[in-house]
Image 1: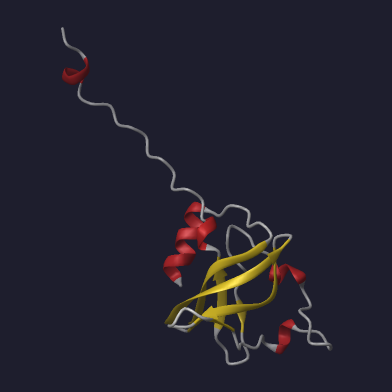
Image 2: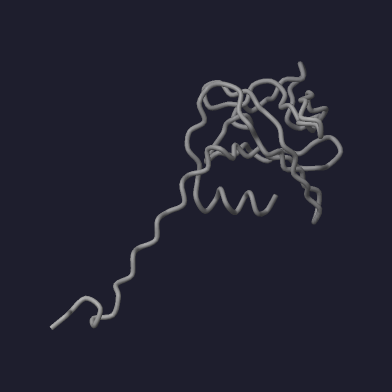
Amino acid sequence: MNEWYSLFKERGGKPVPNGTHDVVIAVRKGDYSECFMGKAEVMDGKITGRPQVQKIDGTLAEWDYRLSQNYLDAEGQVKNAALLEINNGMSAEVTLTDGENVRLFFYKFVADKPKANKKAPAPSVLIKN
């Protein structure tokens, strides 16, 4: 998870258009983290519905996580819509009922790596007289 987060913090992310997109689902608890491939539906820059996790055989299944009750209202809906927003190609990190933290990375929308400046060669290479 730390590598994905560092990459997106360094390079940023492009806006994620409406539709279903490939994601990396990063799960962290303490020093342990694991990442899974999946898909998430996006509408107007926000995650809608439950993400899907990809199985070893390539099939997708709804991810069976539960958000911490701290994030939900009495009807079981997310209280703060900002938690569903995608910023810099990433979702907010949220806590699950089992104490794990999760974040989605829309990896196909990471910003291009900045191009390095071309270094000048030695004067003897450029100046011929």
